[in-house]
Length: 113
Image (tube, rainbow, N blue to C red; front, side, top):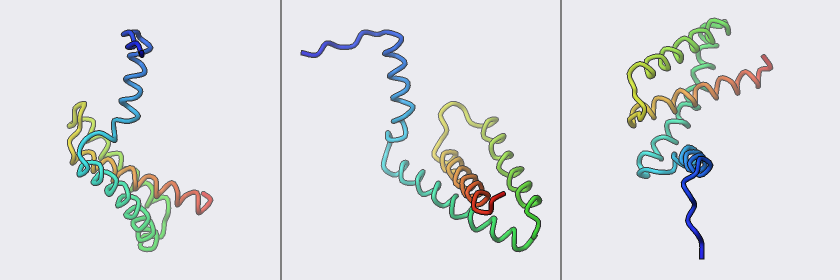
């Protein structure tokens, strides 16, 4: 026979930590699959945008500065407009942004700079 856990601070911490770690697996399959697709599309776009901009502009610091400013504007806009629980649109925008950042950082490591 298993006894139920008492409501202690440690139990509350475990429940919150479990909710943070596994919270992304809750919800409908549509929400989860769109979030993963947005992350992958952001990575794909980040890879291609940096390559295209580097080819057109030719100056790496200018390209990186423009990309950082654009991504920072998206972050600032999100913090001002969205409350504690963002909607599906903001989750998609966040995942696109994370994919782009990951692609740019990976590209920087590949280039050795």
